[in-house]
Length: 545
Image (cartoon, rainbow, N blue to C red; front, side, top):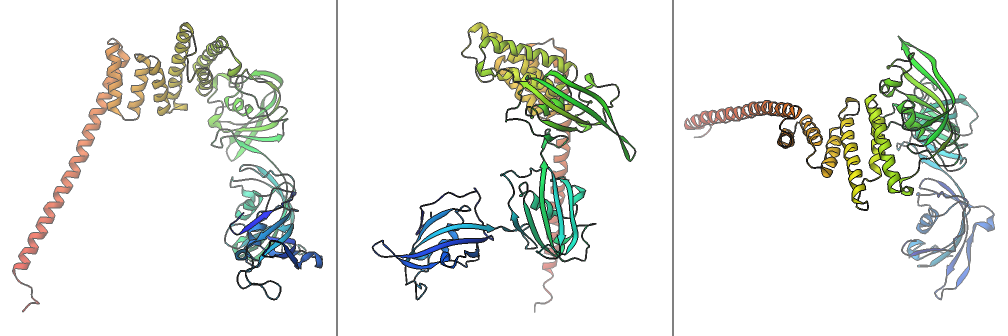
């Protein structure tokens, strides 16, 4: 609805989409003048009498303003009654002889459909037209592996080919060499649905596709038919661990941490040998029962399984940085830590772990103890990332409040929380998972529970030292030493902090002295210049008489 116009009597359309600026619209209509008493006059125009819908391009102002507004709110096949006040119709001028000045009009409109035209890259050199919408509503994701039939032609009739129809497969947003030198292709495909067919009229450099379209071509029409795609997820959030869905699973549920799962997998290693690669199967298993996040499998693989649905088949690719270097305790003898990994896995079934809201206090405490013990075991085996997940689950049961517990249970829970927060801080001190902000966070949580905890104060001081906040580091360690005067580790770390602070002070002094000397030299130079100027002035200006 807009000021001066009303839309009512809307019928249902066949799709959620609506036309946009630049689209070529087909509209059936019947128009009447609204009399002063609100009654309707005779029909002054109707496309149905001509048995041919009106075609116009949205945004070109080839129709009255109210039509531009109303059309953009309609769905394909929708029938609507639109009443337009004069400023949204023909205004004061009217449209003689049928429409007088300042007339209010009513239109019965039916949106027959539209042809979608889009300036793909915003420079007018690649204009897309949708010939077939395709199926459903989904479109390829940012890392999807898409399969497209592409043909290049001289004209929109698609008869004379520059490049005959060719089926290509490439990965979205990955600088895939298959589409290198043609950014238009990916820009178009990302908005297509399965089975969609579009043409793109290109000019100038937008025609280019090195190795496929000759460089002298300056006008070309691309025909693209999206056959489908495989969804690819970035498991590690840095593209080092990815999961490509080969077969979709059932429903929408996925396993949670500590779920019991049954999996079948074939594991392959990819080893570099000079300019070539060697690929070999290093392990395979069928119907294997595991408990997720217990460390039975590679950390990266267990994390990927958490994103899968029952019956899903996927290909998990693991960069060496997330490979067996992080899981040396379970590394097969025939795999090296610098091998990339490729694991084809099927999640056959799973049973989710009991959610915390359905547990009694006693059950929660039992799981906390179990998770803390599993975290300790994983940490000792240098699997800090997986250990943290165990500690996080333990903490989650009573993360916000223990006020509802009895004094005895509260004491037990607080001790478990204290230990888990301290262990989390230790995990974040490790080189592979280093994050000093997280160390400070978990030390702070531990000190909230027990303000005099020496381990928490020591790790907090060490973290501040690593962040070069020496004053805060000294404060924490002094407090710890006051509480435990015989603790040699605290005393040694405090000496280190004071030594580093002394060195920092000396560097700061040297830097500020250099700045001061530079400023002083500048002032002396300026005074000398002014002195020379004064002597010159005393001799008089030679141009004066």
